[in-house]
Length: 418
Image (cartoon, rainbow, N blue to C red; front, side, top):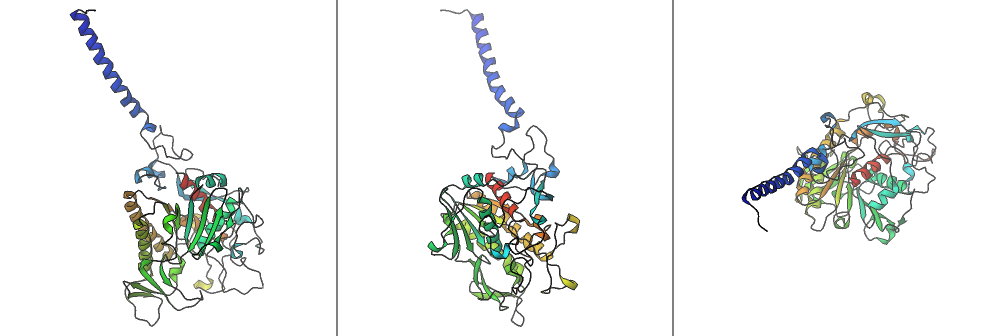
């Protein structure tokens, strides 16, 4: 079949126009549909609709799924907000047969009020989803999670175990492990949950009696051997440390004495407790970043303060934390020591996060400090023991179970999902 010259020219022109249209349409659609160019890992439950302009005043830091750019794609700030009443709380009680340390079992020891259990954290710009035990267990199926820290870390782990009892209970397999740690196994999910005890995260030689006023020796440039040899095998690691650094301490680096905190007559240097705190987190993060087989996700839980009501303006054993409701924001008190420790934590976390991103590691900041500063009513106070038992001072550091500490694991689950 033959074509004349005019028809041939027309066909060529039509063909070129068709090719041009095919090239332009995808570009137009891509520009007109922001959802096609944004990551699919945005949480649709708390995000601004993609066709609307985001209110920059409400943008806040969230768990970075891939890079820091994802932090600006949500209107929800998980860590700024208010406590609101919720009569449907708590998730569990002391009769749920979960793991509650007596010292945090406020209901068992007769705390007369119960409103401290009936508040929920309301972030600015969104609703924090309720804890879903089934969803959490599916996320950690065939995985492992370790809390590395002190008794407040144990407080959070026990909260998590209690929250999960709505679905299943674990086996305590601590006696089967060689290392000194608490291990729980969820056989139906092949999930291991552990507390690895480490008061300072770095090497520490502590006095047997926790009330001993002799300084502990800290080796600031070496991680504590309780956690780093086994941590490579864990999929999720939640690290924290805080109030143990307020006790008397001697600091060592490269085998040499470099400073002291509350050492009375001993020779001291210009290095103080804040220096030791910074170096402990720097050493811990450096260790995690250089472990050759570690591929897990690291969460750092920020420090929380004590709410001791100091009688006559000074610390005494008669002080307590007998509040029965949360603080309003204007009532919250600034603790300069905790504020400085918090700043150090966040600075070291950000540095580690930047370095870890290049190695494909994921980091999440469990920033609970501001929320918990408003909960003076959430501590055991004098209800972590029987009335006839003698105690050194009321507990205004740990948290009642159930209580406001449960939101740490609500947020943890939310971050893991993103």
